[in-house]
Image 1 (spheres, rainbow, N blue to C red):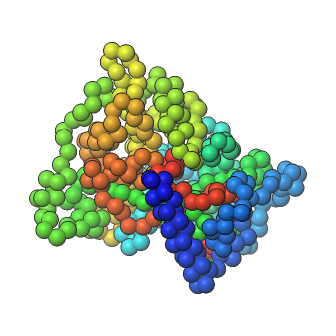
Image 2 (cartoon, rainbow, N blue to C red):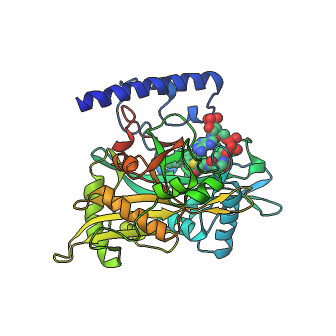
Image 3 (cartoon, rainbow, N blue to C red):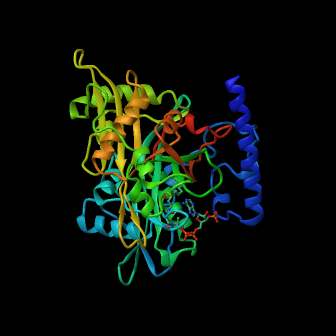
Length: 416
Ligand code: MYA
């Protein structure tokens, strides 16, 4: 019966998306996206297409060898993230021009250490960190990146790129620079003989793999209310809110400790096992687990649960640190936010594991703890007093079609 219900929900979703799609096409064309190998709104619900690549690879010799043309005032640059100076230029561009919430109260403020972590996983390509400069002043005005990832879709592992950090300076918006940047990153990915990609965006494009939602767990109610992140509901007072969101002073799970390098092989096994349950999920090897999950101050925090007698690692939890700038507030400049990353529970209930993570995040003075409704997150969110955020996060695949869109719980992928 459950699967009937979910099939029904899927159908409804498809109808809603179809409606949004057709209304979008009436009001807004997708001049660029209509030319790309992605599912198109007009084809939604048509199950006659086979699953898998939309276009076949072309011989590498037929891939365009020279970069796409930019408007004459601009030039391409590779952003070498090893260089402090260039890393700083990227940081400044993103800090001033990257993603804002719908009300323009907050803007993501990825730290330099975070950008270096996020952009240099094992096997990364330097020339996939692409910038655009003004020729005359050399000012960095746009950016787009990709990193390699092995993604499993059902039973198939597909080498893909994850595309992220697309940003065009506010003064250069709506000049069709983004499509050129997307084509250029695509070209460089093709040159590595990779033909698929995954990406997320807060806007609806043709057409999502799934539509997810952020949930937020208040850790510092006073500040969140002061800066307009949350509001006191009816019959809620500040002192009640403080009481409601209070957390224990220490973690509850015996053997809960920071992940160490010696845990890597065990965590890899746990994570590979867990991620195999989802329809779409990355597959990580030891080197990738070490890169993505070993704790790094102010970047990523990871914990294991180790049985004190058997020394077995049974559970794992991680979150990453992504502050937001608070725009135009006289009292505060930064919102300190933690985001759930990957986790595995085999012995400790996920609810308890997450509660322990909340305790740690509170100790580390985070203001809010965010989670997506992907994987098996949904059930614990309500229990742990997360509130549903507004706005959606859409996940996309490039040049790979699935018969129908997924439920968030069928997705095992978290992107930064
Ligand atoms: S998501 C984060 C995106 N960044 C921001 O939101 C930061 C603030 N905004 C900006 O910097 C600009 O508004 C951006 C657009 C740069 C986003 N994903 O140049 P335009 C399409 C995909 O005139 P601008 C992230 O980083 C738009 O629908 N397409 O617009 C993942 C329109 O096309 P069409 C987008 O506002 C990125 C065209 O661009 C997005 O000046 C994944 C308009 O261009 C978006 N977020 O600049 C990229 N926003 O007419 C795709 C707008 O058709 C990767 N557009 O509707 C695809 C895989 C590639 C690799 C494949 C390998 C095989």
